[in-house]
Length: 102
Image 1 (tube, one colour):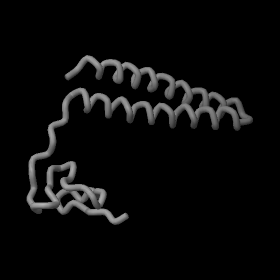
Image 2 (cartoon, rainbow, N blue to C red):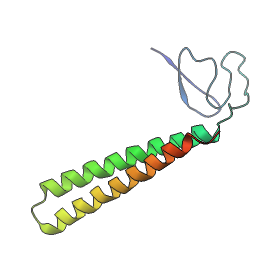
Image 3 (cartoon, one colour):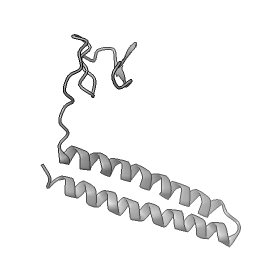
């Protein structure tokens, strides 16, 4: 399927898109106002990125910790794993907080 690139923000959009996320209209070829992002949507986006980062740290820690033969690298792996666990807690707190914002 073909795609469209926005001339304003350079974002690649599906061929069926009528407007870009930045507000540009492909039909009128005029820039428009970007849709308003609520604090709830913004907080949820931060929570999603935090969860993804946490998962990366947990996986990296598990791989390094389990594949290492030297105790130093096992400790590094446990450290990475610990950072991932902490980040997942932060992401969970952000996700729960997003339910109470409008």
